[in-house]
Image 1 (cartoon, rainbow, N blue to C red):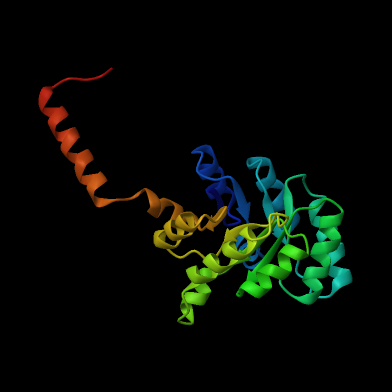
Image 2 (cartoon, rainbow, N blue to C red; image 1 turned 90 degrees about the vertical axis):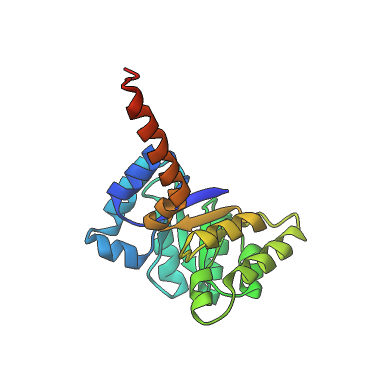
Length: 218
């Protein structure tokens, strides 16, 4: 499974990339706004840090402007994946950009039917939002299972399932068990994956025993 980090904070991306914990980055207008910087500058810097796909999202809603924004964003760096919303215009833009050789991430997916349309439109990634479905008392992981089942029925679909809106490690583990190709996680959730109380307790015990020997490795 590939891990993408969901943030526009360059320092976080650099630290996680140097640790070998991420394979790409996803951003959105809200994350860019939090950075307080211009989108093109942020995307360009992120693309220099990681060679993996960096999702940069359009902000228009009509076809012509969305397409123009998508073409501008992909011109920032070779590893930009243009992110478009799952609307009729967004799917049309996806088809146009995909035909031009651009990777497209179709976002804000909340149903298997929507995911099927994105695959037909040539999306490189579909981003189902599991956390937001959980928020309305629907099990978001059921959607992931449905999408994967549909995609596996048709070998000519090349769209990868990019599980988004991950709120905690359980979401990630369940997505991995189902076989989702990608998960995008906030930095804090990636770090939560590392933590376990038995790991901490075991390390404390080992170090305590080592101190009693009075030795030093170096």
